[in-house]
Amino acid sequence: MLTVDNISKKFSGFNLDKVSFNVEKGDYFILLGESGAGKSMLLEIIAGLVNPESGSIFLEGKDITRERIQDRKIGLVFQDYAIFPHLSVRENIAYSLSGTKLTHLQKKENVQSTAEQLGIADLLHRKPSTLSGGELQRVALARTMIQQPQLLLLDEPLASLDTLIKADLRSMLRKIHRNGQTILHVTHDYEEAISLGNKIAVIDNGKIIQEGTPEEVFRFPKSEFVAHFVGVKNFFKGKLTRENKSTYALIDNRVRIRVETDEDAEEGYLAIRSEDIFLSKEMMQSSALNNFQGKVVEIIPASTGVEVILDIGLRIHALVTRESINTLGIKEGSELWIHFKATAVRFIKA
Image 1 (cartoon, rainbow, N blue to C red):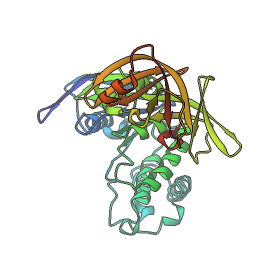
Image 2: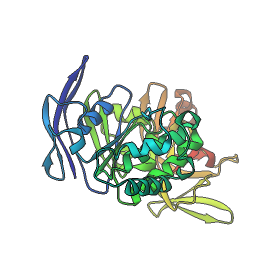
Image 3: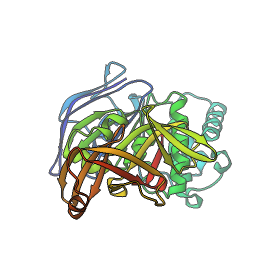
């Protein structure tokens, strides 16, 4: 579908350095990195707003590196919406059809259909100044989607929205993807990456440093940067089950972990912070609903304490103080109990 081959670009002291990756047809591909990593620059090069100094871009096998923006069959949605304030919602969406050979009636029908798909048909008469951030983002998406792009580029589309609106728009983006749209989405939010993408590439300082499925990237980080960036070492793929009004996640068909979630999805990912896990020599009574006995397999000094890795049927990372190491007599091969609350487990829908 999309091949980015050795793209390089210098800009104001910043370099994209021989960036390469592939987006297959039907992918929801996430480009994940911190601010200033080069994500937006890369999108602008793919869209044709900026020319690379070297490298090539192919779409459906065709070299589009030097093609005009309007000939690329690529749609780009900016983070700041870029909506025309003097036009109505209907006129903003219809603007993308300017210059086409469609009749007035065909344009009207296309606008109505696209607005209905994105849940903004009742806003068509409104001006942008009367809309919320979530509504503006839907208008921006509609204006791009009406062009029926082969590839949809999203530049931090949820960054400025509050939590409830983000959840709503994530659901809408999943629906657009399920309907067959190939998407390349840049973000700095790892939860956004997990909940939307089927493939993730991590970019740092203008270079792709890791690429794979969400499970591969977050569970097996290949660099200190990725491990630090995601901040979660206990990351597992699980399937939800419900028993007697309680919810559990089954991991690798072996370990059941109690979770608190309102998600109705069956499959997803579990993230547990190392600092939310505590250890004891004996089984203890506490408010923690997850209690497992395990064997210490590794002890690693860390900047904020000591990382203890235990095998409970899967490997769990716990962050404890140096004092706890001495008090509990922790050493490799020790048998310990680990405890963590169901509320400490974050479930993210796949």
